Amino acid sequence: MDALWEILVIITVVVLAGLGLLVGYLRRSGTKGAPPVTPPPPAREAKTREANTYTPSSTARIDTSRGAPQAPAPAPVQPVAPEPVDVAEASVEEEVPAPAIERPESARGRMTRLRSRLASSNNNLGKGLLSALSSGKLDDAVWEEVEDTLLGADLGVDATTEIVDGLKRRVQVEGAPDAETLESWLHAELLAQVRPDMDRRIAGSRVGDRPAVIMVVGVNGTGKTTTVGKLARVLVAEDKDVVLGAADTFRAAAADQLETWGARVGVPTVRSEKEGADPAAVAFDAVKAGQEGEVDVVMIDTAGRLHNKVGLMDELAKVKRVIERQSPIDECLLVLDATTGQNGMRQAEVFAGAVDITGVVLTKLDGTAKGGIVVLVQRELGVPVKLVGLGEGADDLAPFDPVAFVDAVLD
Image (cartoon, rainbow, N blue to C red; front, top):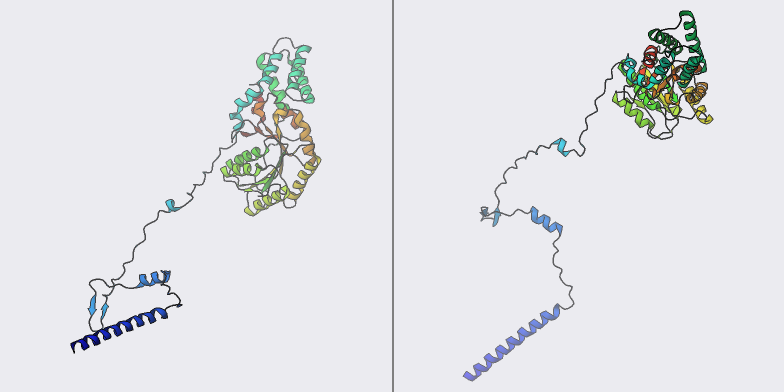
């Protein structure tokens, strides 16, 4: 009996074991060919949900009736004031202070103040004349020496002849003079040639309901643009409102140079940003700006040009015509380099034929002993020397003073 039960138990164990093996086999065979399960990727959304999910703290109260934790009410968020920002430090470009506007002194009497420069440049003329005339007997050899000295100073043949003849007449009437008398005679003869009676005023005031228009012309290298800038300072010193026109559109730096001169004294410059633009158009716009702004003076700087270039001279005449469509030109100043002497006269004659010259500006007069160019220019052109350049400083342009000039020549 006991053996029978043992056999039944063994059979039962074997059957159960076989069933277990069968079930395991079926499970394994059922998963074959099934697609692999892809684990959830750590996507950005999961991170977002995780971040937005509230995680209760250890102090959260547990609601036993619902079986879920209940979080305490969140504390109100306190606004955080933004930190102050230093604008100066945060700015990429520091603010550059505007340059101080200069206030030039009046130009009246400036030539007298600069007399020493003029005297040093012309002392050969004065000393040569006084030395020849005070050497003793005034014979033909002395008068010939006087003539050579005057011609060498660029006075020209006509002026030289008139001065020598005038001195001879005085000697015949009054006899041989002493040194002091001789110097006074020479002063009178030279002053007569410089023509103190000429009107040397600059058109620097409004004419009726429009500004005065000044046009500045000359050959290359005479200092034309610099002269315009310095003349602007002279006018500003006289409390004049000025507009500059940069009609020299062929020289790359001309407009920049003129604009810099104007900015120093608070004077605006009308210019074209395009190199090689029509100079007549720039001049027209400058005059128009001056009329609209009701200024006192409009000054037009033109390109330097060789007097023997017909096309360039025709272009200068065109600039003049275009300006005159809206305003008369009250002043046309010719800038001449005093160191060129008589060679500059041919230039002056051609310019006078293209435009109506009303006055001459002699630059670099402090750098030449040939001060007689003043006399020669006035005689040949029939117009006065109105301004002279006596140095490279900003205020070394002086209204021409005939008496101060002759005093300096004979100093």
